[in-house]
Length: 534
Image (cartoon, rainbow, N blue to C red; front, side):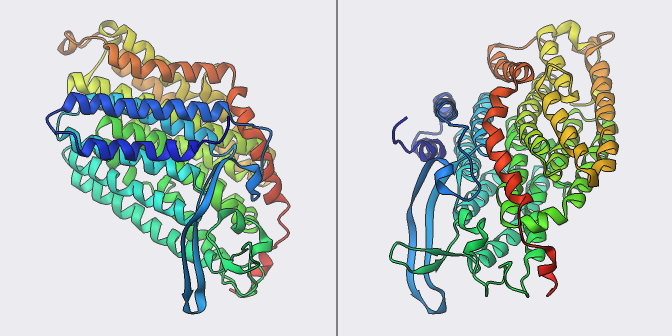
């Protein structure tokens, strides 16, 4: 495709759009909305070009030449700082089969959410400026290969999300925004400490032969680059790698969210405006599992192997607990929020298997859950915009008045259940196949299959209560979806159907990178016995 900074363009295009919006008069609300939609549409086109130009035969865990669309140059360099020596930070971007699907997902969901934002009428200029900044932060996380840069984008996402919930949210928006902020910041502190520890444990050789500490994630993944005296070096008998792994895992688990760090999510979803709920469930939750796969697994492979049963246990808890709580909900949006907790448990279960099948299923589930749950939150938003209520017992027979809308509902609901020929089935099947083949977590996998039954229960019950049966005359004047809502639902429906029928379109992109990662973790020569100095 020739050299062009595709990853920089797709990452910073929303920031450019945000800066332009700041100079547009606030009264030009319609222009601001169309301009923001054009920015996200262009980002989606570039993301599609990146995926089209991706060579899925290349792969690697810690070799730069196995990543594609690489951009790397020295960003920050400070010399002569006492014993630290030279501090350097690289601007290092690149993608592989683990991150390429997430780049497309982020661009797609941002575009759909921008269309959904047409109903925003309060402080439109500020809303779309924050929206585009959030878009850039999410995209940056998935393309960064320098830990320092990764952390900056991770934190960049926090600020706009706080304001998008706290200003444009529902009645308890301040509480939900502060809760989200505190939880995420709590995890970020752990991540920062581990990042610093890894920095002072990892070295890189410069062109002149000088050894310097580095934030390069690929260097951190290679055991040869750890200095014996580094506090997080596997060669140091008094290292603290086990504690560091747990601290980093907690930081990512909060974002998933994994039980018991999940309590911020239902509040954030319920109070957030519909487009922000779409982004929250469609993309933000995936940042947690992506961080574990991108950083925790290859940097701490020996501890990953030792803790796979515990990861599977928490995955099982997420699946069962999330489904049971979803069944008890009377608020439509809260039900979908808890269903997200349940379905992210499948990702954890697949990741814990440390098999190619399970890991592929987990990453595919991340993508599929992003599209399916985005559609589910849009469904809630459509009915809330018309009826101004989300009570499941307030409706009935809506399919009689809104047949087209109810058709999209049926696709989304059955995709969430995991019906064959829809995308959710393929990823869940791969998760269970991979997890069942790992003998140590087989019992947990069998218990986790109850999540399929429970998911069918609350989804079908909701479908029956809200859309089937006799029409509640209170809603006799409701109108079916309009052209803008068609434009939101059709792309997601096509993707759900297409990947359900031809999943290889996405699986081929992931396979080689997943196999390389699984092989790297499996062959890790370092034993947990090296942690006996704790």
